[in-house]
Length: 253
Image 1 (cartoon, rainbow, N blue to C red):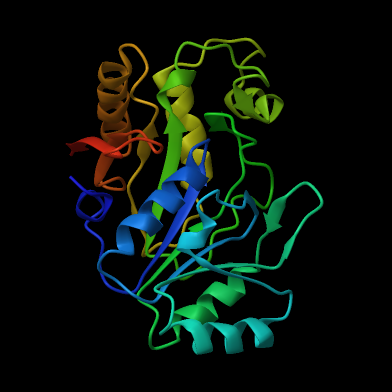
Image 2: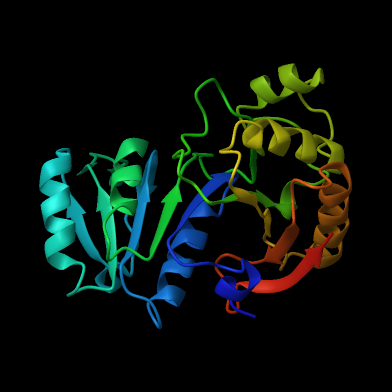
């Protein structure tokens, strides 16, 4: 099954990826998939991302001026099916993201079919706690995908495994080093998605199911998420963002 099918993608979606590690790989996997049958695809971030190794697949434009970016997008949208937009390349090699308001403007362009946004950062950890002002989700988001790596289950709640673990411990009234359980993951995902645009569908992606017993652990976690967030989460995708295929299973309500 493709990501497009698993996510039940509609036309003119604005998809925001939030939460733990795997978001960048998932964004580019989705971009590559969409290349085969859609045009007018924009990939971008409101935080920071590494420039993809296969960047030849995407036309890249960097500018901190919206007017320049607007002109470039409108000029190139017919020539290149997928555009990667950022403000600048930083000294560490990452691409600096754009303001979320730009994404609202992009959606008004008539030839744009899909916008995929990495709207959160996790420093590569499989789970994170949000600080104030995070995630940076555009208000026109129609599909929110919280990402978590199943490999964090059973690990200690510390900075090695959970980004901003001190914030996580404070939010959940736990001690640093406590065991990461399904309840811990669900609580942190709830903190991440609680202020999402009210019209956005929410479909979590449980990543890294290729680890030993990963698929069974992911199934259990998915059922727990669906049980406690009944009505808000419509399905949970289990997969491997760097795999082929990306999608392994879907767990429905």
